[in-house]
Length: 479
Image (cartoon, rainbow, N blue to C red; front, side, top):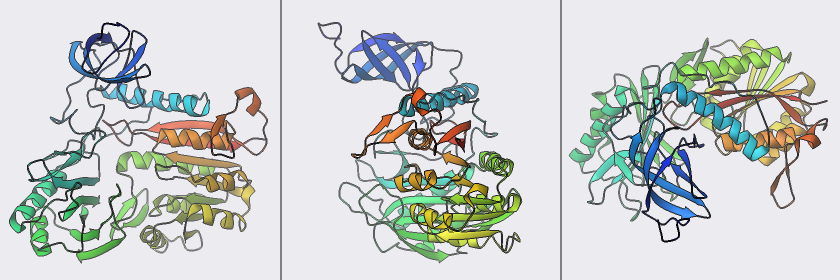
């Protein structure tokens, strides 16, 4: 610390006690009026810390030594834990991970929307490791110009090389090895973000009931010697398709718009909850099938108990949940902007005998929802909204509030945007003309017509060992 004991500078070392955990799973320590956030620490631990950054009494620190480890600390399974940015809480006992995620949902609702809600313990995943059915991994070059395949370090685009990953099944390591072999043999270079040179940017693989969709994302038009890549992948998988996706953009998006099928079937079929469905290279599918089943079954139950005879499934992806709703409730409409996913949803209708019970609309939810609401009886309709991480579009929020739909379910993988959207839907937040969101005091919300109230909040651990959470919130329109 500096001569002024209240002022911390970079690389100062001090000892502190971890008092609680933050929304990213990091430990929170108060020291001389400064609040420090220290990743990979546990409540109750006495820790030697080194400051990384301090501004306006908010500091970030690195744990140099755990002086008194907590009973809740466990040995991380991955040797790259704390180096790779994929997992944040492997050091926590699983029961504590579940309680932490419950607390994150509660705290986020309160901080962002001023909503106090009862949240039960997060629904667990039966598999704490090897649960992911999707591998999405960047390819680049290291500081020596050598090819590297791995995951980004936390808050950076520096690739940490990996050979395998404990939250993925064994096939992920085999894929990484196959691509390394192909790149060495054929002289294919990883993409260098600094120079814009190189060929291969990302590898994306999806396991669809034992059939694998492999996508090689390239910076340019060419994927050299693709037959060699096919030969390497044949040593990993019995049944697979190989795609090339071309992404010449400079943003963080993994896929570009153009997909080319190089070998195999364009789509593979799978079965879940009695529904046969199809998946293509750009079809959304939850990464944890076990927890997805629990989430979707709970959503279907909410819809059936609502007494509705029509369901609108907004952001419906490949149509699995839409089909489940159609099978159990009545007429179900899916709205999805990705054409491939909407086509996969259409392909569910005949095999699952849902003719006349399921209809899919391809377009933006904010455009299609208002049009659809003119054709259905809103009072007998249940709405499901499962948006991407950015949450609901403001036009969608307005359409929902103006719809007259009495009950709905919001599914979210981002607690922050979830809290914002729930705040707007319940009247806990109002938006000013300049776009600023303002909290409405709890006593001023009661009895406000046109808004919803929360009936239940249920977190699901779709992503064990990470800070990420899937949340189902059921809402009912107030009087």
